[in-house]
Length: 191
Length: 185
Image (cartoon, rainbow over the protein chains, first blue to last red):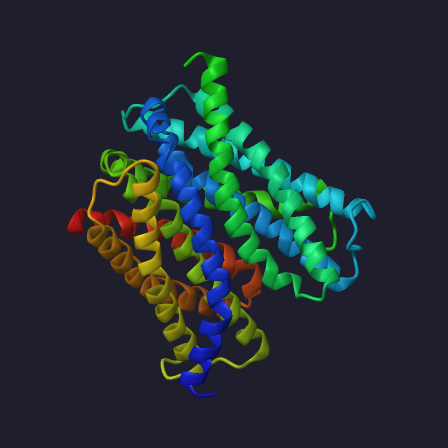
């Protein structure tokens, strides 16, 4: 294969996934743009954003890869409720997602306090991270499993579906539920 | 890939790496926090944040997935003149130059439609394309080095390379955006 052929093939195969994730990223950006007031009210929230978005990709990307591999190996059936392994994998993803979200909020609070920068109370950041992690986690776990199953039954390679779905849905749901979580926590906490 | 799908087994395999990657991402959050005032003043820059980070991570993960497969198949040699390596590197830069103009104009247009844009479209376009070009070069470098290290250490590149590359490229996405905004805006 010449350099030109290798480049053309990689470009053609990469463009659809990248275009989908650009669309998702821009939508997430619009929501983030609408949250300027929230970032001004909750000090440290913007610092938390990359960690929360990356957690979605890391946790649910790994769930998707696990389910795709399980389908390839015949370990799981492409039906919801067919087998307890799937439930275990989803529960583990939700648990790890919540732990990483709370950890990110705590680390953000400690680092910003240590640097002497303005930061919201620890419980506010942790509550926002947990609520956003739970809501986006449930929706992402369901989307990943359903889309991988549907794609597999229609004959698509589940491995190539997981990346674009998780990055696109992860950005959009991640930011949308972050907005919902911030507003809820501020309402309940009276902040 | 482990065949034990119980919650405890999955968590033991996953959580340490996940928490380490989370700390790295908090680091990129601190960079983002250091130009919070500029981001809050210019909605089009705030719109650029998730899409720049995400696209940088994806450029890296697409290349990483292809190089990992090539390593498994034995069709790549880690030499500067290798056709597969050079072709994939070239495609990564070409992909960045294709999507980042749309990213810049899209971010400006969406900001103008929703919250109102303060910067000129040409400025946002220049920020997006410059960041995208630099990030594609960094993505190639990070991915090639990580895949090579995983290959030399006999780790499965599929397990190691994609999470490392995606998160490192996320962080670089924020750092490059910060530097480009400092120079161009």
